[in-house]
Image 1 (cartoon, rainbow, N blue to C red):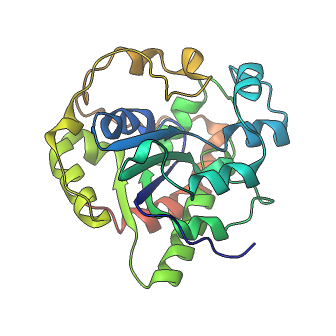
Image 2 (cartoon, one colour; image 1 turned 45 degrees about the vertical axis):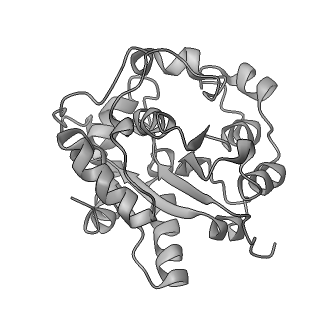
Length: 249
């Protein structure tokens, strides 16, 4: 698959893992009048290929969303729907399965959202008792980060969810500057509720986000990782630290 030359406009791909503030950032960018937002466009392909029926909304997601990664990625790098100048794409890095080719990513402005692995692992056990490093997306994020750095010679933007909550306007201003768009205070607040742009899984997963109207207070990350996940944490920490060294603060 050859590299894709994108149509006019800025396509921001925010590569995140689960439990990382990713949907709150989707709300933030969706509050901009100049921005189209897309919610986890490769999720249906991921579910179709893995058969992970433990994911809430499995059937609804496959019924409502395209599971063909080639069609989806061609759409993501094509003309921005609605003639918007900005397209913010919320991506889960673990949805980028090995069989999904990577060249289409070159048509995007790639950014990375991270959170301390201990906090992610503890949060994930609420739904998945035995998450692997691949399930929280850090190996895939590092792969993409290194690829982007080697391709462009420039360090991609990296933000930590805790930094965003401590200083939303400060971190968002730096992020906007890095990706070449103007910052606006419209990114700091939004009406509650679900959106037409939310994925079909939103009624199952977005209960807390539904109630938000802005960024919440900084949350305390925790380190009480279950004993059986300590090896997973040990694998994830060097990956997190590699990305965290480049965080916008």
